[in-house]
Length: 253
Image (cartoon, rainbow, N blue to C red; front, side):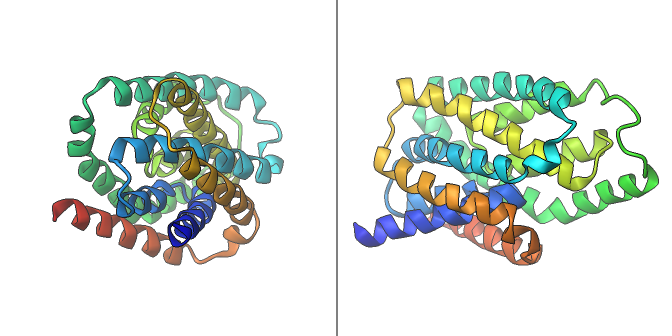
């Protein structure tokens, strides 16, 4: 039990760090919980709630980059809230067997998103260079519904929702990557928060797991907002991909 608790705590630290910098922490914590025999739906619900404080911690760490983006954050957060709530409802109303069948697909999608994330980042960077003056045009209309759809995915499972959000924001919003990352952290915290509130009321939650992941994720959120910015992205990405592939193999066996 002590070894298991230590492993979950460390997974929470890693997830909090990765969520703040990249946005794929669930691919660390979720497979860890499955490895210790936690049922998939309970693992997903408990992991979601546990990562909420980490998302908030990361958002606080990026608060300087949020200056001047209040209107954008409030508008997009409304879409994330609605999408996250719908995703959480889908998780609860669909049969547990359906979630267990789709989990390998979701993990695979998360791994693919992490692998292609550098290409997305390069595309976004080229657009930034082509438009050096930031904030000169209003955000396009499709940003809100796309953010809401990403919230549905995040409320249902959430692995690599940060990568999805950065792709959406980077393509459509005229801001620097660091300022977009700050918005991403707020939106992810909104999705996890609203889904977590629903899960607390009606879902089967393992509160020991929640506490361990929450403590680790808060620590990781601060690491990600400071030291994490200087960590080699390739290292973080490699860890996520390896863990995700191990999880896929475990489901196949």
